[in-house]
Image (cartoon, rainbow over all chains, first blue to last red; front, side, top):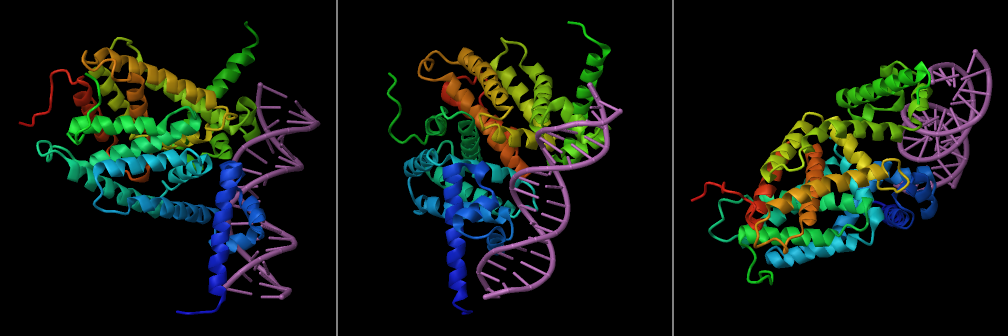
Length: 205
Length: 205
DNA sequence: GTCTATACCGGGATAGAC
DNA sequence: GTCTATCCCGGTATAGAC
């Protein structure tokens, strides 16, 4: 499988371009992130960049994949408690607050990837399933006995993920929207409805 | 205020163009809805069309406004019961299932309108507020006495709207997603958590 | 296998004739 | 108020240098 040293060089170049793409998106916003601009910042020509990624869509897909890898660390321990997963989830959402450009990229791409021909289509379907299964499993494990069987954990996961994306949309539109706060409220509603609230109920009367 | 006959003519032309734009989006998908194509279908030149709307963004903003007017009929009666509003809401969502092109337009535009300079920015902010207030008021009126004061109805509205948008995104990605089903489940969760479930609880034991 | 220069093309905007 | 002609910008395809 070993080829020439150029492989390593190419991989490094790709990586550098991805990082610069991220930097541009973050510093100048999604709108400024044209192929030409990213190439300029990365110190390469337009076509030089495209040599590595083929199309802009591919490039951006890779950017998201890279980002998911970083965020994914939190979903590592498979047997985490519901409360742990919830707070980890909220932490990611809060962190997103500091990278609006990436959130915009994510949201836009998730719409464009709607088309089955889009290079990121499979990526999003898979991402959906992986995260959904993880959430569903955690919810299932935390379910009180008297409701288990009457609740579909994967439906809970679907709602949570949908709410998250919708909140990101709204936050992009209006930065005053408190994403984490709303999600936390949703979690608490689920807790009381599903009996997963462990010990801590809110302090009202 | 009366001017020349051309006013009526112009208004009629605008209206015709809007309808044709809707038709193209619906029949050929959002991707096909270029200014050139819409102009062609409407029997006018590219620049002729732009004369009436200025930019493509403006045109699409008007399309959404028109659509909201039609959907808005359901939110008419201000003192409707929670259950009525819920089922009306679900009906709209179900109807959207038959017009994927419009759902895509809505979703895409809501992202692009993120930019405060975008012509649809105010439109979305206002839409957000109007619908949110309506939902919040209905929830507030239905709240059980022992939880009122501990629940923020506008937060409930935010979550419902966010979930709706997120579900639309997911449904565009994967048509198997049951938007109405998920929303109904969410409503039921709120019912049990907030005590707004009136009489009908599910039939489990 | 890595890259540059150039040319191309689709889509939206603008100037100005009618 | 309508349209033709033109321009601009961004992404893509091709040819070929290193």
